[in-house]
Image (cartoon, rainbow, N blue to C red; front, side, top):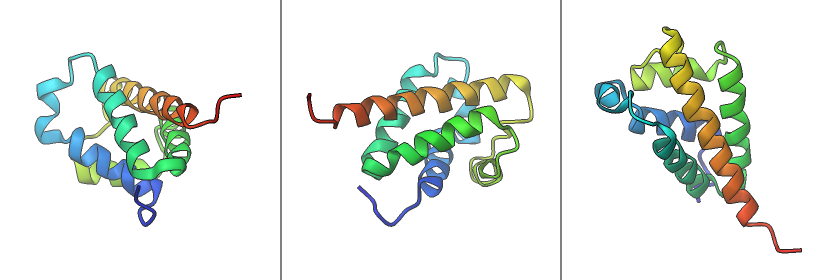
Length: 113
C-alpha cells in the first residue's frame, strides 16, 4: 500500500502504464473486462482502503468527459479518450469495471456479520 501517492496519481499511472497509446491498438478491440478488473485489483493493492476514492473518481470520469483528470491521463498515455465516441465508450468500460472491482475488493475486507 502506498500512502504517499494520491488516488489521482495512481489512476494516471495505471492508464499511462496499462493503456498506453503505443500498445492500445493491440488490445482495444478485445473484451476489456479482464484488463479492467486487473486494473481495479492493482488500484486496490496500491491504495488499500483509499481505493474507494479511486473508484469514485473513475465513476465521475465515466460520467463527465470534461473531468480535469483526463488532461493528465491523456498527456501521459497519449490516448485521447474523449476524441472519438468509440474510445469514450472503451474508457467507460474500463473505468466502471475497475471501480466495480475495487468495490468488490473493499467488501471482501469487511468483517463478517
